Length: 123
Image (tube, rainbow, N blue to C red):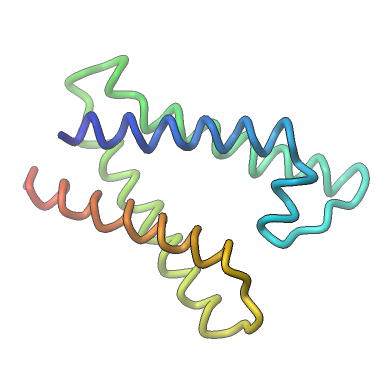
């Protein structure tokens, strides 16, 4: 079950990396960023494209090494726990947050909770 979950999450991250890399103007608008020519575009490509691609590969690791499920699962829990914590803080501190951001938060919570359940089952 954990391997299937990580495969789904990893695939979603690879798709997000592609979307951010090949359609940065659209993607950045969805998340509320204004891309500045040059450095802003480079930063968005690096952080949103490159980092999400790396996360996708990390979560897909059990497909390459079927016995290595625990570490990618713990990594998934750690990353999404941090995302949930910081996203929740953002909701408390900032106002006028659009619906797209709430959709992202919902997905982050679902991944976090599912990862927590799977980690709990493994221990």
